[in-house]
Length: 376
Image (cartoon, rainbow, N blue to C red; front, side, top):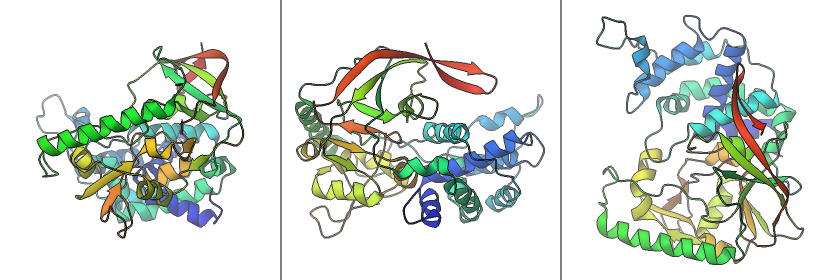
């Protein structure tokens, strides 16, 4: 993945909640492929019990273990150390593009930035599990199939996705769209400052994402010719049909690569937009941090760049974390969160891109081996 070698790439996967979730998903999928996931004492069983107890909201999934005459769920006390011990015995499956995609989908679908991390994310963040997941990280980063995770945008194969007959029109003046969105954000921040309590634990929620609004987004084509944007969607609404359009990208565009958490912080330093009142409650719940929050001002950024691209590796290492901004700036003590992004997504701020060819229809179909997007 990274030019600094396999060790650095593995550390990146262990650094963020989405990366750790991916590693745990891979171990669970490896056990399932071996046909051992339904045995007593399996990793799947121990992970379920430990995650249930660690979940801040104690989800209802454990009700499947309640007997007909029982009133209290039977949830054994399983520690992270016990799960990590079982993890060490799992024979990791050979790395394939399909298996990686399955784990990425599960990882992205479970991201949530408007409430506390779920029990599985909490479990994966414990020291015992981080130590145990290192073996999985080294296994994945040694594979050629993860090499593209840390590469710049592939402008030769970009596709936009439209859900449920959404308009795929490229704005004639993206900057005007972004300026309107920025003005809306400023207005909502002022309203939140007036109306919402400063206590971060108060029961309030708002626009928790930090993506550009109203401009096209695209992703590359994967190994099976499906666009990554069909699969890798945070907070999906469960769409089962879509249309994709090929994007023509001219040369010479200024594309900013968010190739690290520091690259995101640099955007926030150069083009800060205060979002403390509006993001305070959601981002406190997801990161545990109480303080000043900023997002990149995409309208300002569009004056300097034609697009921004988030590689998969950066998403796995940094999404959902509190990314600090330098203390010697005007936003001293501020932080930001990459939230609402899909891995490998590029947002476009220029009208110089064009759709080419005819729309391709897709349908999500269920098979014995799982769900798959197929051409309509």
